[in-house]
Length: 404
Image (cartoon, rainbow, N blue to C red; front, side, top):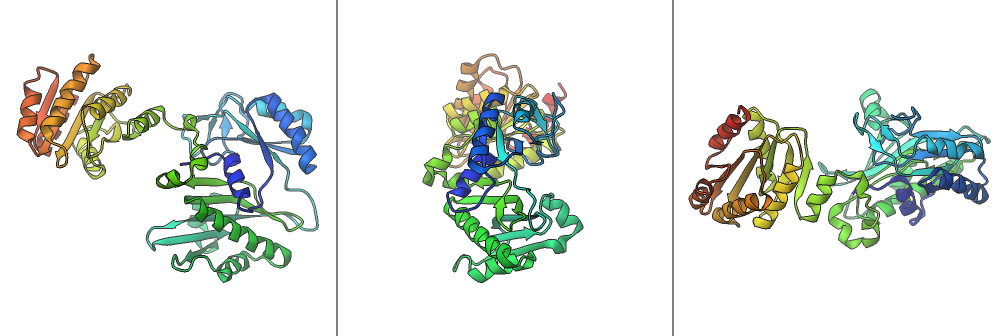
């Protein structure tokens, strides 16, 4: 589960991680009040207005309606509300959102941390994530902060530092010092970075996160180390242990159909194709999507109804798939292991009659327990539903209905 930058920073602060201070606002007037409060708390006289969406590249992204960047600097208090007005309610397009962009409902008014001092501010990159190949967490760092890490990896892979953490012993003090040393730090900045990394790793483990990305981590002109941005991805499977973190979910940032599917206990991901698919089991769903492509179609979604599929879940799946106007056919592919095929077939017929005006053909491929009985129920229903037993037969019928 992704959370916003302002939420991520609050989580990190709770574990002793130093962050750029800021106050969230959802109107231009609230942004102005936030700037006044921020000035009183931090003494800042310049203000950074940052769009809050679940996507990176906000600083380079553009608001479609106004042409404003997603992250802008206000050098006067009087400029804050106008800068916020140019962002709030607009559609921000970045390299991660795609051309459709995302609507901005909130902005973060943050303090200026690039102030002059004894030395020049310096940006670093730091992340913590699970290395699945090695089966342990890894700290990744680079002196090339403020840039896309993919670009650094492609052009200057030698500038990426990696430190793997043995899960049996956890993060060791020498490892933290090793990363700070490789970043070229010394003196007080070195000590600050050591504290920063240790606190960040503590937060990562305590929140059961799947990824922390701090880009940039800033060394200020007076050698403080702090997070200017923060991307935190929480592990959905561990949210039952973190009720407070689960409440940070912002469903306005998610696809409405995926949210609706989640309420029905379905695993749904919307795609751009023309054939809706409903399957029991993630592996079978992936194979079904391949089959759709081989038959000349394009999958419109990934939808796993689970091993205990019944008439209720089938109907919920139908209703979600049919909300996609691009769907020209629906393929239901069920392996009857735990669930019997005749029950699935009855569920399909009941759901079809309950929904009513279904104008796209439906192919139902049943295999496993009582598959023949299930096919008979489909064939004798009198509805615009076609049964299939084998994958080849199902693929041929998908191809036929797509050709009209």
